[in-house]
Amino acid sequence: MESEKISYSSSANLGPGYDILSLSHKAFFDKVRIETSNGSEKIMIISENTPLNPEKNTAGLSIMKIMEDKNINEKINIYIEKGIPIGLGLGSSGASSSAAVKAFNELFDLNLSNDEMVYYSMYGEIAAAGSAHPDNVSSGIYGGLTLITSVEPLNVKKIDINYDLNILLIIPEMNMNNKTMYARSLVPKTVDMTDHIKNSEYLSELIYGFLKGDRNSIRYGMNDVIVERARSPMFPYYYAIKEKAIKNNAISACISGAGPTILIFIDEYSDKNNILNDVKNIMSSFKTDYKIIETDIMEGYYE
Amino acid sequence: MESEKISYSSSANLGPGYDILSLSHKAFFDKVRIETSNGSEKIMIISENTPLNPEKNTAGLSIMKIMEDKNINEKINIYIEKGIPIGLGLGSSGASSSAAVKAFNELFDLNLSNDEMVYYSMYGEIAAAGSAHPDNVSSGIYGGLTLITSVEPLNVKKIDINYDLNILLIIPEMNMNNKTMYARSLVPKTVDMTDHIKNSEYLSELIYGFLKGDRNSIRYGMNDVIVERARSPMFPYYYAIKEKAIKNNAISACISGAGPTILIFIDEYSDKNNILNDVKNIMSSFKTDYKIIETDIMEGYYE
Image 1 (tube, one colour):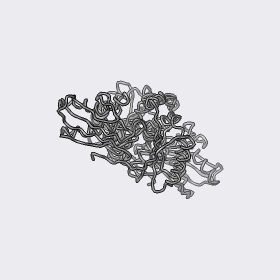
Image 2 (cartoon, chains in turn red, yellow):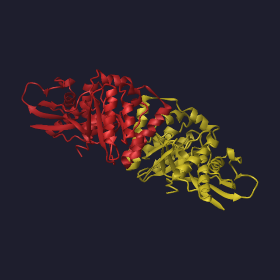
Image 3 (cartoon, helix red, strand yellow):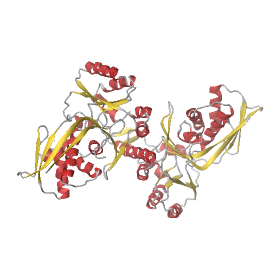
Image 4 (tube, chains in turn blue, orange):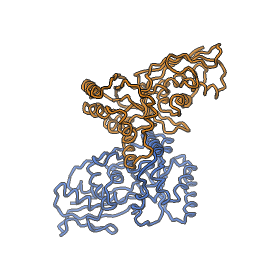
């Protein structure tokens, strides 16, 4: 018996949505296959580039938690094929666990709800980041844009994006040690009331813009004077790229997850060639190699 | 030549929407009539209970600003009939100025846009509160629920409420000197990051709930751990009322504007009689007289 599932890359912390908005896209995916086994180990991980100890593996930890809760004692092998690059703000760790949870759910006919799958996938994030947060994994389960407004109890809403947009991902080729931990350390502990109000304005107009399909509102809403501004010294090319992208009529741009990847929303009105050219010049001036991926929103996997 | 317009009461700071969300309702209205005159004064205010000096009158100040900008030199009389009680968090000051602006716009055929009328109405708030803010006046011009995401330049969005709800206003009979100033002094200068995130969760789900007509999301979103919590000592009956209202299946409740009025959203599932009874007991235990008004949302005046 076996089951195989994929989960796609995603951009958490979308615009002003630190910790609450995450967007799934088709740029990359992880593939997880789970099979029942007669081997000696309860859970055997087979993978080239993720930890083989289940307790240190994002997929392994999620599956251990389900097996415990559901009292499942069969032995299994988990094959993990990572397609999403690690450490670039693309939701890599969450994708392995959500793909594993989907495969396990199917293999053992558990009929888990989307929210239950998000809940178990979240356990994988403890292996990767030391704490459980459902933003990226909610993308892997729901697809599209997810709004997480409570972790305990879990509350995930799917936000329809009623506007036809595409995505450019600017992916710097860098390997920052402890990037996530450093990015977290830059998040301020307190926020000025004026900044809180400003971000509330952005966030409410962004939600409005996606649901109403209002381009100007999406553009206006995709700003963040709190977390993104605090982290911007990590990504010195970011504001330059955003400014040029908007000049060339991109809808807007933001840092993807905890960076270093930059996400740019474009549409038919955007001058993509000019944007790509400007990105090239900016990244060259920062002596930073990068890749560009043009991609689409990955709409729901389970819907 | 004359023109007469009315503007309704409103509840600013709706739920987590401090400074950005305002809701118009049919509970009360102000009526303003403007006529051209041959008298000796440029602007004569005729009113029983608002200042007669145009520079200290919310309607007068708004009209002075339009006349200056549009170079209008006719003499006018402004008759103000106040129906909205003053100082109870019901948008009274803003209503006189927005009604005046609408009347003046019609009288002189100015064809002002909604946003231009909000802009001029805002000047009235300087007379009343010492600073210009467009939340209540945007209700008077647009009606319904307005989202203000920028003051300069002005950016107002109408948020459709796609759920059938009614409003109970619990209006304490109190006269607090300098209430607005005191309420402002309680607004914290900084916000904990955890509270900022919590309020972002409420706000985004509230916008989602109104647009999608999702009762549970409206209920969840109508919370505020920042400004409302900081001001709650001013209104010691508030949390008790909210708790009982929700127990009796009200949708939710919040402080209206800067208080002391409490707004409760109810619908067909709410046990109104129990709510009214609980309010009675709570207000009696706080030795506070009050009025209850049951009302509806006032949908747009100009739409």
